[in-house]
Amino acid sequence: MLLLAASHLSAQLGESPDGPEHTHVYLTLEEALSKSFPAADSVWTEVWSPTGEERTRIERRLGWRLADSTFTIYRGIKGDHNLGFAHVSEEIGLYKPITFMVKVGDDREVESVHVMVYRESRGGEVRRRRFLVQYEGKSIGSPIRINRDIIGVTGATLSVRAMNAGVKKALGIIETAYPLKRGN
Image 1 (cartoon, rainbow, N blue to C red):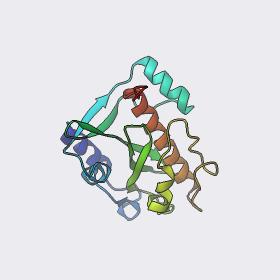
Image 2: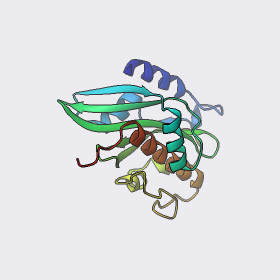
Image 3: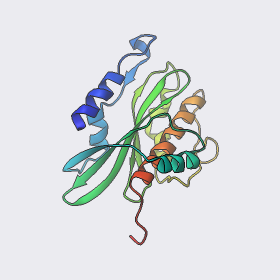
């Protein structure tokens, strides 16, 4: 299943319609998974299809409709211990999609975000650690809004908004697919 998801994503990592000069591949799927789950013995892949009720719940929390009907969720395992979940999000920046992985811990809070592919000529600063670290500790209840709890990047407002939307979407998907059991 991981191989299938990797080949599908590799096809999406192709060059920009404006040519290869504006497509920057920073991480492959395998590299992003390795960064997200460095201690994992294995990484499982699930293609999750939410029910109508689950989809509605996610959309209400996000405030917009989901375009996809299925979502690929990665789960890191070490021994019999769950290391969390990851989802690859692809959100439109100014003109083109930004591909990035959101790693969510067992507590359903963001542990890391890794930009995999950036396709715009400007605004690539959103891939820098000093920007991405702002998402750490965020949960589905966090605002995740520019100038509220996320400091923007000059000249990259739409890229920051795309990143915010993708992080919020990943949190909604993972929390709904794998609800946190209360009392743990």
